[in-house]
Amino acid sequence: MFMMKLYKLRMLMKHNKFVYTIYCKLNQRRWNKNAELAKKALAEQGMQVVEEVEKALAGQNVKYFLSFGNLLGLEREGRFIKYDNDIDYSIFIDENFTWEKLEQCMREAGYKKIRQFSLGGEISEQTYKKGILPVDFFGCRIEGDYTVSHDFFRIDDYTYTSKEEMHVLEGRFAKVDAV
Image (cartoon, rainbow, N blue to C red):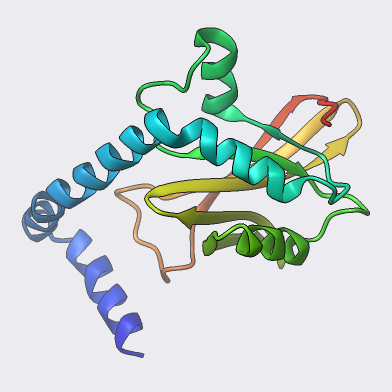
């Protein structure tokens, strides 16, 4: 109850640009520090984390692939992109996959689930962490000639009614065959 009142207070502060500017300035150093630590961790430990995650998923009969900026950086530059600060996987939602099974595999590998996003009552994304570096799993489905997934985000100038409310973007990409 207290957290909900605190959240509503924060949303009210957004309407007062002076107060909200001060709030953002006070938190900017913390946000920047965390982002820089995660970027450094990705550069130094990213491949080790990828190996741990893929070892955890081995033998689970699920299809997945490294995606978004991670895939782009490794394919284009042979390393993670300098400004990236997490690891992204796309994982196929099919008859062999359950989010519970993913959570169990990640927990056994020493990772803790830190958030999850749902759309229409169905889980679409989960994030795990061991140390500073987050690992995102984006659920995706094959629809005709497309691979479809959802990305959840917040808009700074938008006032949300709850901490759980987010904007969502549906991505339709060329059909992917994953191993």
